[in-house]
Length: 250
Image (cartoon, rainbow, N blue to C red):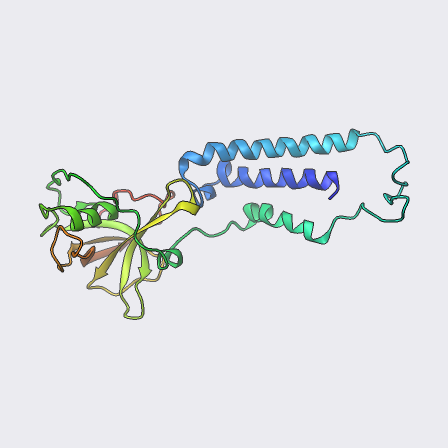
């Protein structure tokens, strides 16, 4: 690939990173907020390298004529000046960052993932007396399966997440996908919903309800499930890959 084409590819990739991380929030589809400064720095560096490459290419002296003739053909007759067709495919990822960013992770990914985000807790503090009680999906799941005090029994709880269909029976999960660093290490937490039909996949909802009885509360036999009393559609959060407390009243 010619040097000026390489320089253009570097600059275009850098502009794509700056577009995703500096001028928009697209980068939050793929990495945590804390990674944004690194993406901005990487994008700026690539743009500078591309500009430097273009300048050097314009100012570089022409060859001495021993290896190539004036049309870029070696003395033995092979033309190395043309760019291989496959090399142009390298421009597609850079262009996608500028004009068509890959979609964020959602119900398709969650439906094929097992719950991994809920860690074992040694101690649970008392829950506030607020009704409905805002909880994260991770905290609700942990308390249902690990809290021997059964603190969620009888409590009206509010959680937010997006809809993941559960299967052919029409059931569904309220879901969160959580990034540790980026999309490559994402983890999923899902709470099964009962008592109301599923909204379309990937719809963001605020859900209010009570724990759906089953098994023994406070042990692994208890289902992370909710009997739904009320749902409200909400806008997807800008930073969707966290398991934050719900802020939207139901």
